[in-house]
Length: 341
Ligand code: NAI
Image (tube, rainbow, N blue to C red):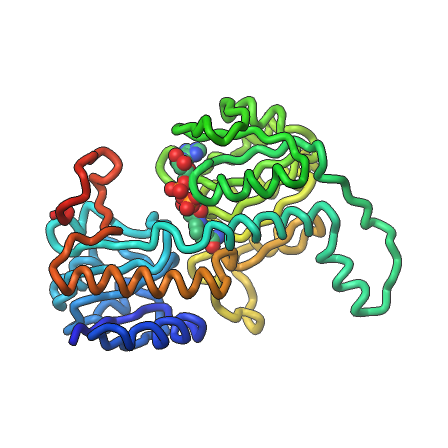
């Protein structure tokens, strides 16, 4: 039986992993803490570790895991900017879940967009207090507005299809354009100049870090709406705050935040937030923050558990791991008929 140390466990993770792991010769031990250099020792004696988006998987953590016997790191998420890949090569195989429900994330992005442009988050609070006034709730139609989709991969594509249904004009930016989408690709600079709404759907990489910064915000249309359901690091939060203060940014909806690691997924309602930028952003009437929940649908959770357990099973059987990744994957074009090392 293969033993798995499962970090950053939430009740909804257990529901799906417990339901599906009965099909495999696998035993899962659930740990609540995130995986980091203080908690990596918990995995001593386990062969497989299952981790998530805000775990801090540095070289030191990988070394500790390896010394403790871990040989597979199964990420139950798509993004992997939180792992020191180079430190893992030759020691610990890494698998991820490249797609579990692009619909979950794209639909959440749209829900955020609709909320900020129609102020439904304010209406909800008002009517609970029997305040039925409409003052200050004037929104705008999405129909015929120009929306820019940054990153036209799995999620971006679904988002584009949804936006087409609303009759929006679509611009796109991606280093690998997909002509079949029938949208206008242009430079990021042009996106900034022309878009009424910008929605981010690209991964966080050294190239995309702080894509939204003081300079690019400066190029944007007055009152632009920014939606980020991708990764917090794509946006320079201080620049965003200044953009909102100067009214350059009309509204922002964020499912992710640069410094979310120690905050999101936890109940911090009884503590004083030390992150002043986040506090100020949350306090703004035209900012809507959700705590990295775009993925959180039943379908996505089921698919995450299914794919993760499937990858672990491939590892146990000695098979090629369909969803293995390493730092060379971007430039390595080999047919995936063998493991990364
Ligand atoms: P994908 O890999 O299918 O697509 C990403 C696209 O971004 C690709 O077409 C790629 O060429 C493009 N891209 C790469 N660098 C770029 C850059 N600098 N500028 C513009 N485009 C660039 O990935 P998928 O599944 O669509 O996911 C996108 C991102 O969504 C993930 O990287 C992750 O950060 C985020 N995500 C957020 C979730 C949430 O719960 N909030 C859940 C799942 C993913």
